[in-house]
Amino acid sequence: MIHFLKGILVGIGGIAPGLSGSVLLVIFGLYQKTVNAIGTLFKDFKKNLMFLVPLFAGFGVGVLIFSKIVDYLLNNYEMYTRFAFLGLIIGTIPLFFKEVKKEGFKRKYYIFMICAFIVGAIFSYFSKGIFPTVDNPNLIQSVILGFAVAASSIIPGVDSAVILSTLGLYEIYVSSLADLDFSVLIPAAFGLGIGVLFISFVVNKILKRFYTASFSIIFGLFLTIIPSVLNESCKLGNNVNSLTSIIIAVIGFFVSFFLSDIEGNTRKVKKLLRIDETVIKTE
Image (cartoon, rainbow, N blue to C red; front, side):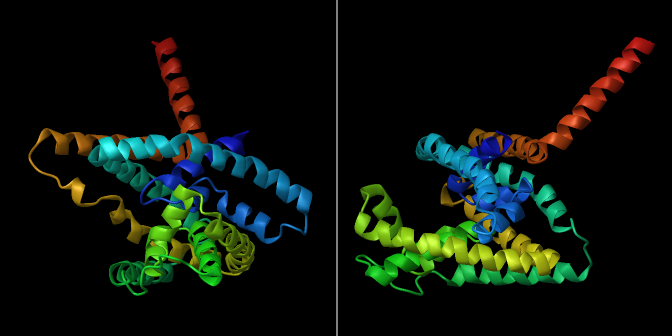
């Protein structure tokens, strides 16, 4: 049930602008387990399936329930919604960084972060329009579409919109989902399945051997996609809307900061409450 509920939150992250489900898997301490379960799926099929089914079921529920809510909020309260997501995303940074340092951390890993940040920023800035937009994809392009979605979903800090736009496949990805164009979706699903299994296998091997270096690079890439949460509708000024947006972002930060380590923070709150009760009884 815990994995199912976390899967719902991961699903929300999958549809939130600037955030990805894989980042939330890192925050919840489930990323390495998930990649390992997919990468070694057939080695211990029953055990891996028991772990993956509730997680992905929750993910599906999260996407189905909240996709329309998020779409409504973005269409009617875009500035407020985007600042809320900005606060939520920034609130995950402390625990994400804690996850990076989990297996030992040295100063040299800051270089990995900085280099990844620079490369990610350059790629995001110059990647637009490298490949022409694909309007009528062939079989190979549809398979590549699915593989690209798998890569951007599994690797935290990689924005799927940026990757697909670079390949000229973003518009056809959105339209094929909206129109249920199975001539694109079926081969894309094949590419997605192959991509998930292959990339999870590779990432799992890399994480086992170079855990801190890998997560340092992932963290650097993650930082580069945060600014993409805001767009031209989010300009601040001396008005009520700007002040409200900032307040919403701050609230989002504290909500995210609490939820990102809900078990630990709940224990701290209970401890503080017990201390207050002891003080009251003593007085």
